[in-house]
Image (spheres, one colour):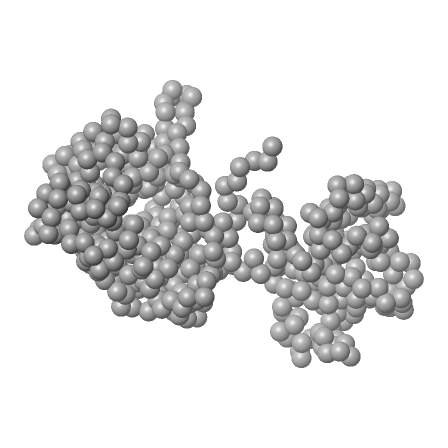
Length: 504
């Protein structure tokens, strides 16, 4: 390590004056030039065969003690003790101490080793032993510089705390804050466990288009693009629902898709414009069947990945084991807002009651619209433990089947936890005449300026006319599920590269 780096190593790279950062870069580039001039270009290295990872060495010390191992990693700390030095290498699975002694590798190689920098990637060969202080280590016999780091890393004690830098430079975040990697290991394992659960239940994973000619499947503002060859405007999909239900019409009966959706809306701790959703459709069941599927899926996946169904989110203990609580939307509003919408005989009665509560109203909303507004305003945040809120107004559920005993409501539920809304499900509307009328209402809203309203989809109506069997459908936000499973405050903590506004 250069004297300049020794003098500045107490500061994080982002805290250093610009001149100092540039000086450190120049020192590292000068070292690289020297190596290249000596025919030791680290970027010419093409591979390194290692025998063990850091965790394999640490976990199997008794069988490996005294034996030679090869492993590779990034230098994260270095301590010069004169004729001996210690450093820590970090690989995918953790950190392991390296002991370097001048008598073991020779004076020249020892001096070369001491000129390495934090962040350099090396491959090492050495003997496994335990130091007098009890730390499992590797006594170096030889090493090779595999990659020269030309940028100084943030200082180890303070780490990388600036969330803007962390999200923009996730690679740096994972180096300096290795615990961050665990979120994405859990993400990978969770997606794998979800697929296994669905496959074991006889569902077929499919892929549907990301570029759509119609806006539909959810109430959201889309991203638009243009296909030059066809001279055609297209939408990035906001949901795969209508395509997946076409597959049920075609006879696949049990399908699911896990993939990206895109919604041109605000960014928050719970929203990213590009996000991962799983949608599931099963013939010959209804929203009650989707409730059972939801609680079984999420509890089973948590048990598989985390070893427990009892989680802690931001200090709140959450139990995912079934059965989950259930409450109708009307009863939730009655409980938390002290308003019974079933008692209102008209839209006018509902409007007057809502205004009396001091809630601002735009336009002339229906009773169903107002029930949904009051639920979101007064009840949603009270739902901490997993809870199914069922029976939604038809006005806010254009693709859900009406309740036979109350046509103003639909067989729809959403599932809520301390995170907020995590899933949405219906008994799917399979009456093409009713669906045509609902699309027509959406078109009216669209013409009145509602950019989130769906378009008329004539081909989907044709599919329904061919015949959609009774079907249950479910959508689960994978990113929000992972927020819960990793105790992450922001959705950006579970997305490797969240959407960020470029720096000017």
